[in-house]
Image 1 (cartoon, rainbow, N blue to C red):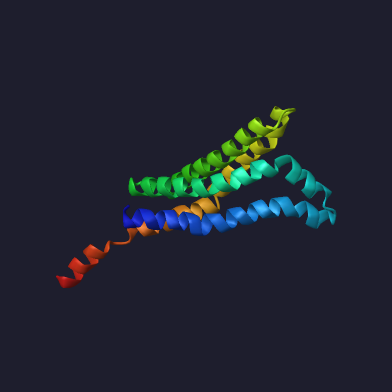
Image 2: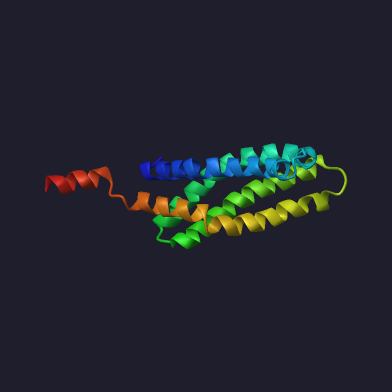
Length: 159
């Protein structure tokens, strides 16, 4: 694998993973912190616990796919904003589709109603991450791509 591609994927992981995992944890624990009661947190975990585990696993895979996609978009000359939108869309599409598939496989009643929050989350997360973390990751990947390769530096220094 090309060095710049590896660095782009690593950037996706180093920035995306901590923020994403902390967001998932915060989503589960904020009701407890706001109300002082754990009932809503228990409801969230009881309702979406298995799906959340699938979301975390899919998220780690999606960051790799998103990093690779962002690298290819930047390399082909696409704008940072378009790259950020594509990055955010693919990452959120992978994780929320996985979340919904697990709901579809594990829930017996009211499947459609259970899928409404993840569908809304997909739209909201895609918009928010396009203009925040996706933009930062795309910018950093563009900087990685604009760095001259070591070979070019060596040749330039020897001339």
